[in-house]
Image (cartoon, rainbow, N blue to C red; front, side, top):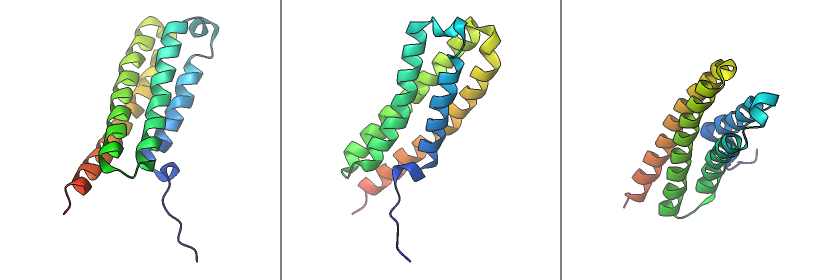
Length: 126
């Protein structure tokens, strides 16, 4: 049996971030939200940033760089969580799916924080 190395697609944080991107794009499928180009652009870029920076951090060999990209992912995740409040407040019809999606940001944040802690611990190894 062949040993398969772990890939970023195996990370639960990346998998959930990917689902979050889809959920956010779906929030902007309606005629009402599609026209909000500023909010749509900002939240979708932030969501894609979470997913992308998890992947980029995972692929980095240098532990300092790895941690840097995980930190960017964590910050972008916080931005997504904050912008979902805007969606819920401005578009009451979308409050429920926005707040449901927001719950995933909390879990994603915890998983990214775990990646950051793990990377920091490895960088302190002798």
